[in-house]
Length: 327
Image (tube, rainbow, N blue to C red; front, side, top):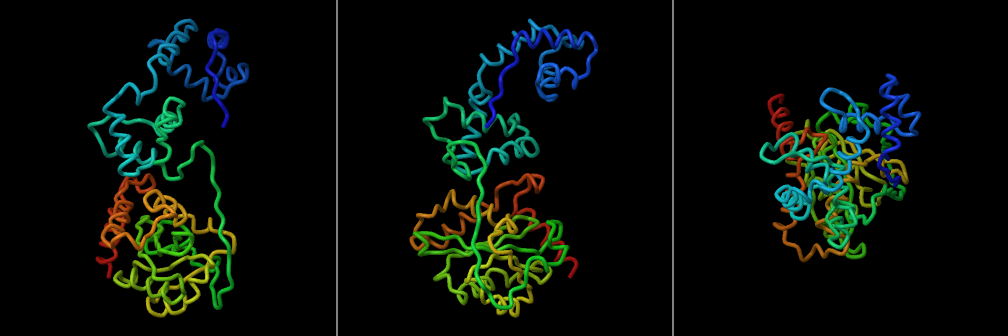
């Protein structure tokens, strides 16, 4: 990750001269070898109320901010609230920031970057707060995942899926996948509605096609047809009995391309989030049905940015009511 370097006094003096000569933000940025956002942020933070920019004063204001430390170190109440959401509720920094900004008035909001920067600050290294994040990465970086493929008779390609289902605007389109546990000896079926992110899951007695298909039907049969339009899965042999599911639910099933799990990225992301409470080493046979479903419920009670900070359960309930009114 590229490290940001603070502006020096020399740079601030040069910025002041360019500012006085009425140079544009772009021209100042080019002269300093900085981005336009850096110049804009510097002027916004450190210029006077009248709009003047004095380099010595700007340097002192920047120094004072660094001496005050990070926001979460200064605000104990906010830090405790954020830690509770991360550690106990398993919220992501983005969910915390969005909830505070849009749905909470008693606590001041904080940006996503401020939370991440504090978590990965060297002062927090020994606390290992990053272990409570979704991906549990000790360093901030991207992660890519791939899945394999298998031959399934009469499979219908995702490219033949209706265009309405390609976007996430239409309600009733689902994605499905398995989660493996105990060195691939145990499995759970997970399905996710694409528009609302609402998730259902059930442990499987085995990953056979017969057991998987019957479990799919059990999870989705109680919803009206308008709430189960399509299902998208990968090419695992556990979904080989797809025609049986389609017949029972009147719900067409579409298959991703081999090695293209990103085509059902929603369920991949969901499985990654569920891994925080259900890591691979978990023996799900020792988890009661009630405790397992409570884990899934907690996942559905977490606010999401793409839902305007509604929870998946709230969004799903709203859409199910609309479907019921239309039928």
